[in-house]
Image 1 (cartoon, helix red, strand yellow):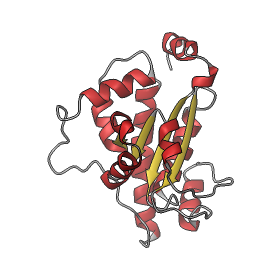
Image 2 (cartoon, helix red, strand yellow):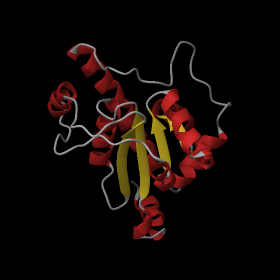
Image 3 (cartoon, rainbow, N blue to C red):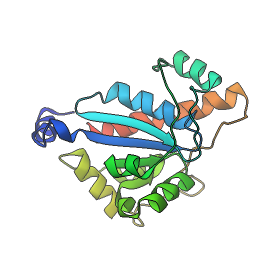
Length: 190
C-alpha cells in the first residue's frame, strides 16, 4: 500500500480495519484458501480477512485442500468452517462469493449489503483500473461499474467447487483462487 494511501486508510481509525469476507458453500475449500492467501498479504490491523460457507458445518479444513494450501505456502494452522450469517455480512466492508450463488445468498441474508457483495472475479474485473484513495472507496467505485464492465465472452465470474474431485482439480481451483486473490490484494493495497 502506498504511503499516502496507507496514511488515509489509517486515519479512518484502528477500529475501522477494512474487513473482507469470502463465501463459498462448505467453507472447506475455496473460501479458506482465499482467506489464508489474502490475510497473508494484507495483514491486520489494517485489514481483517475471514471466510464462511452458505451450507457450512463446523469442521476442519478439507485434508486435500490443507495439503495443497501447505504446498503453496499458505497458512494451514487451526481452521474451523463456519456457516454464513447476517452478522458476518453486516460487519464486512467487502463480501466476495466464489460463485454467483454465494453472492446471492449473502444479499438474501442482508439486502442492504448489495453494493458490497460481488463474486471474487467480478470484483477484480470491476475494480481493476479504478483510482481510489481507500479500499472502501474502491468498493463504491466497483459497485458503480456494474453493468458497464462486462466479462469477456466465455469467461465466468465464478470459481467451481472442487468438492469430490481429484487432487489435481483441487489444486487447479486453489491456483485460480490464489491468482485472483493476489490481483485483489494489488487493487486494495497498491
